Image (tube, rainbow, N blue to C red; front, side, top):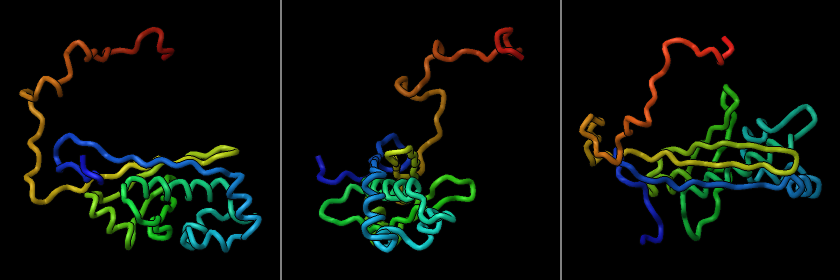
Amino acid sequence: MPARPVAPPAGGLGWANLGMDIVSVTRVRRLLTQYGEKFFERMLTPGELADCRTSDGLDLLSLCGRIAAKEAAFKTLRVRGRFLPWTDIVVRRSDGGWPLVELRGPAAEMAQEAGICEVTVSISHDVDYAVAVAAPIIAPTPSLPPAAPATAAAPAALAIPATLVTPTPATPSASSGR
């Protein structure tokens, strides 16, 4: 078994290294109280800090979510002996409100070495914790031809048995409340 798995060839079935992290709001609150916002400038870019800012200062849950997302994204890269390049993994808010991950510098290099072209992340938080799950998007391998589209002659292991497919009724049922 390889010490550091790499992405499977594009076009076929494979796996991905998910990353997950949880951050304690109490711990981050203590760091913010003890060291101030300056402490988090080592971990977050000015844009990320701006995304976490409200009229009352830094929003603690947003801050914890960003930290968890960075850790989770780093875990998808599966590297040993390298420190998390905090400001090279950038988690910003999209126009739609969901988080987007941008890999820069050393983080982008680590991703490229692992066959990853992008990382997607989901963040959730509550009163005491923020959690994030990240999934890599595997880069296509240019040296391989694209996979053939699925056909009726697909292997039985990949085909959906007809008994699992139920036809959609043409009209709503009486119990649907329509």
